[in-house]
Image (tube, rainbow, N blue to C red; front, side, top):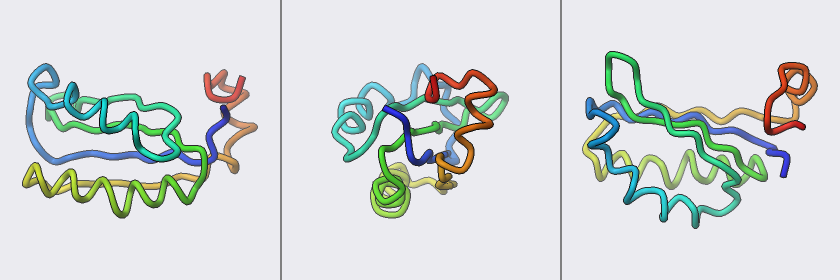
Length: 103
């Protein structure tokens, strides 16, 4: 499925990824409405935790970024950063770079 939006997330905590709660989060994220795929990220030299999430619609991406993700960060007692990107605008450029989302 070709994504219509991407969400970038980052939680401002310093935890080595192997100690991060990703194993508990994956089953929850798999139930997130419209989520196509997630790529986990771990900040180099900072151990911040985040990811790039692909969504089926901009609306589902916004709902995650505005309603769901801030609550996750609150439970971790951490500041967060998130951005929603419209995937349709960058489709041609992404294909030219062999993005696996636009094959």
